[in-house]
Length: 322
Image (cartoon, rainbow, N blue to C red):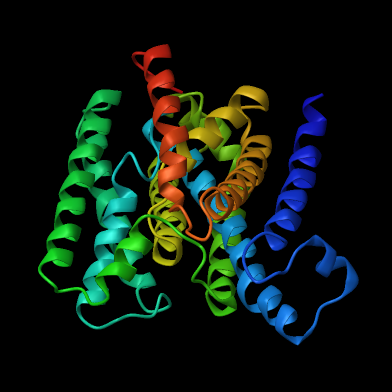
């Protein structure tokens, strides 16, 4: 039965993508897609809806893979980019970039990655200082995320960041404003990050056994931890740069994939990537159809799902360790 899980998820992703392409304003529905497109309809499909669908797939995959790596690194199933403050750090980097005049999402990618990396390094310093319990890591992440969030809003209300309404809309998560140029930048980064994680699958599996056991199996733990930091920050940062802060995807999807799939990373990572793509596609469809003509920000929907899920995991396991 578990062997059918990945093909089933892939099929659902394709189905959700097809639905997403046919949903939205502009009079372009399933009938038009099947009967052929006029010039305007073709523009709507190729320049507006297709980039949106592809970005949802890429961002969902990236956030879920980042969550898998963070949970392994911190040995904590509650770790993920939003909860640990990594997404907030990336958002701060991006908003600082806009405050100095960088408005293109292609240009704010590097500051966003830098912000994500700095938060991750701070968490790493806490982890390696001997405070390896779940509470310390989570509290550190929450504190850093709150600080970064406060600085973001300080920049916004002080007028240091231009286009405040657009920035707020982006901060709440959206894939509606991206074009194919952003998709073409995002694609190789996500393929690289997820490809490296899959390439390290045996080392990641060994790490599940504990540092000492992994070391006895020939795994360079220090090197692996640094690689995990770099790749998880890369995936989270690039997602925030293009799509804003999208909460709880990196928590929910890896946890469900581990429950119904396997803890082996050769299985877990593909399941998490497909599950993340499916979740974000579905959330984006809901955001467009729940209150037309307005769109509900993505992180509002994911938070409505993810916050109860977080509480369920927290109550289910007081001291959560992988």
